[in-house]
Amino acid sequence: MPQWRQGLTKSLHQTRSMPESRYFQLATVDGSGVPYCRTVVFRGITDDNQLVVISDTRSDKYDQLGQNSHSQVCWYFSKTREQYRFSCTATIITLHQDADLVTQHWNKLSDAGKKQFLWGEPGTPRNDGSALQVEGDFGVVPPHFCVIMLAIDSVDYLNLRGNPQSREWHQKDGNGNWVSQSLIP
Image 1 (cartoon, rainbow, N blue to C red):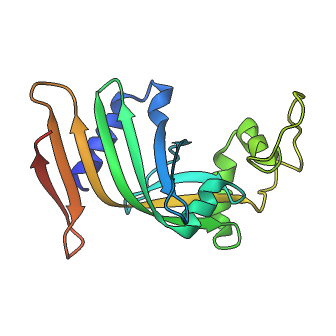
Image 2 (image 1 turned 90 degrees about the vertical axis):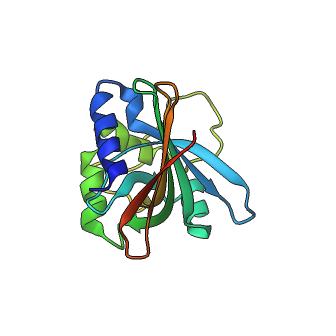
């Protein structure tokens, strides 16, 4: 297990009682190079070190990652005062590509979480203040639900505790092994 992954596992364990530790910021760029950043929910990490999030194929995030698969994650743990910045390459997995994986992630959602994918197309006008209506059966995976796998290419870790603070850079070498370097914060 890479050194940064051991640290992330520890950070997640130490902050497990804090709901905000399950959220991180995901930055993407559109076809014109305009950056976008949003908060997403951490859905897990795979054995091969890919961060997992879910999304909607009708969203801007889906379009942006389709145009440019490079992204960056910034994840701050306030309790431990640690920041992880991951440079990633995204792979979007739809129901058509891997029904088992997509269905598995759909089934992990609460009913309220599933209903959010059935309110209509994200980003379209909401003309009145009435409650959002569920359009469809949340017992069935909608075709626009997808899983995004963020393959980590490098990690910039910063620990703000102590004086001096500590910072580490992690990346794969030519053989695919993770190597680390301490940096000046």
